[in-house]
Structures are given as C-alpha cells and as structure tokens.
Length: 173
Image (cartoon, rainbow, N blue to C red; front, top):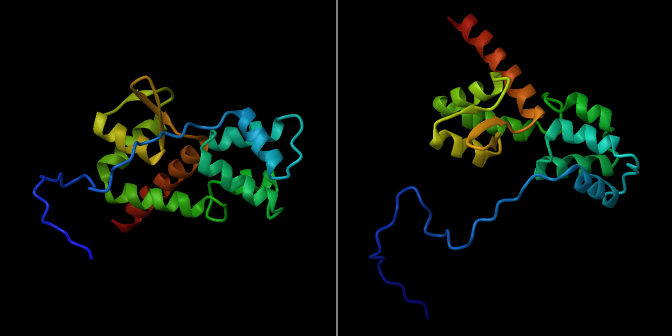
C-alpha cells in the first residue's frame, strides 16, 4: 500500500525537489591522466605527444576526452583526422556542439557573454549569473572570477558558427 500527502513545504520554482544529493564537480583531466586513459583504451601513446595534442583541442574535458579515446580505441578515426574534423559538422563532437549552439541561440544574453569570452585575448569578467550558466555548461573555465574559453574546440566551433550566423543574418535582411 502506498500513501501520499500533499506537500506543504514551499518549493522553489527554479529548483527540482529531487536534488537530494551532494553536487560533485568533476575537474578536467591532466595530460598524465589522459595518457593513462589512452593506454587503458589500448592506444600506444608512449611519448605523451598524442595526449598533448588532444589536450590542446579539448582541454581535458572528461566527456570530450572519453569520446575521443573511445573512437580512437575502436580505430574508427586517427588522431590527426579527429583533430582536423573536431570543430566541424563531420567531427565526432558535432552533436555535443550543436546542443550547446541551440541553447545559446535560445538565450541571446548568454550567447553574447560567451562571444565576449571567445573574442577576448585574456580572461574577462562577466555577470555572475551568466558566468555560472556558461561554467555549468562547460563552455568556460574560471580564472579567479574571470572567464576564459573552456577549450580550443569551443573557440574554433563557436567563432566559426557566429561568423556563419552573421553572414546568414546579413543575407536575410
């Protein structure tokens, strides 16, 4: 038998009542950790150069590293092909990047803040709420209280996407 009562505790509209655990922040992998993971995927990365190249593109982002190592371990793609196609529609990260693009298109103030980060040559301060959202999405990293692009993959894809969007908008007018 199951019995339920009405909830008389006031609930926050923007907070799930199912958030009952402790949030755990998964930090970026180091180059050594990427090297160790590559070996576990059966990749013969001896000198660390391949791990360095992958880190230069995805910055140790755990999900992006895992996806790369999965495809590389299955011999579906070479590292040079992966790096060349990473920020494109034919790359393994395309669906991940498109989801972020769609989110940014729905929230122009978030897109503008991210564009500010992408076009800056050094860390920039942002509105704290926008910083939190972009950081939660993994699109930026924090250097103190200032924001930098999360990785080179994001910088390349979103800079190119923004240029394409501006061209499309100009032709539409």
